[in-house]
Image (cartoon, rainbow, N blue to C red; front, top):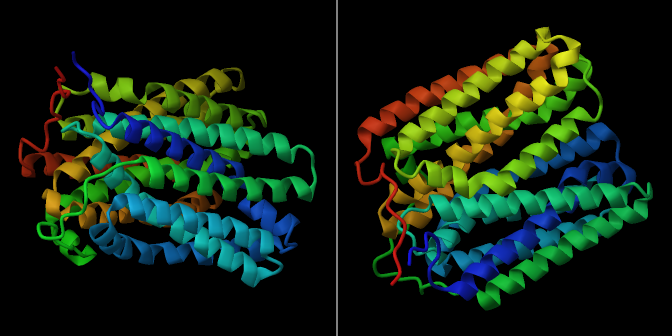
Length: 408
């Protein structure tokens, strides 16, 4: 019988999926409303709240090298559990915050915990999975997390419709509780191999950044993730620039989330026979086409705007489903196993850098309404070129997804 994903450690597998689903449900409850909480409950001015939360988020840049050392020393499960407890502490700190300093402390704890989580969670997923190729487990986790985050966002919107500060406090409390429940599930039910310190090698970010193929992978991921983060500017563009209906951005986001939560594994299964870098190049080129088509929305007749928006939204989601699980699998396949923790924690810098740069891309709307989408297309084309070089450089064994594991 062929079982393409996680054929053993069933308890660990289901506990991991359940724990990450609960974790991301809680994040969806509160994360989109952090600034709303700071302004309505703590009573900070909008500019003050934005500055404080942004400044606290910068602390996340210091986390990846620490995460690599901790994962090397303690193992990925312990680090993921620690990250969830750290995020729970951040949520509780929001409940206690009464001024800008309190909000800064809460946001810093959440930012540090979030970065620690992302630096270690895919090492844990790789350890629990027994598949040689990690596309499928990574895609499955992407599906679960997207669906759970979307449900959390919907729950948060329903509670917020009460219109009271009490609802916001309930959301923060529920967020903290979900992190604790997820941490308990992972700590008690997920089983991984003990850390072998004799064969494992601690690797710092500078060592990883001197590895040119791995640096090229990180650069490509950063460029594509920057394009993905341009979505934060879509509501402004759709509503204020092209005069779309107010409900359209939310509907596009909900549709995209549903597609991710349903289609991730099918996409990577369909691409299993294709070289990883070729699949990534195709996805990057699709992102470039999406950026150009978003720019063309400026000239679309009003009657075609809604179907056009949904049609090109499918392109972006398809590109995302093809690109990120395969890039993640390549990030796990390129380094030697004994150096994987350090490499994969440093890999998180690709996303952190894109997240930090994304507001600057969105700010380009003030210069010209087409300019951010031109940047998206240019970044995506640059990523295509970088991936092409990567494909000519890395070993063929790393560039080829292995067949599913066969269990008798």
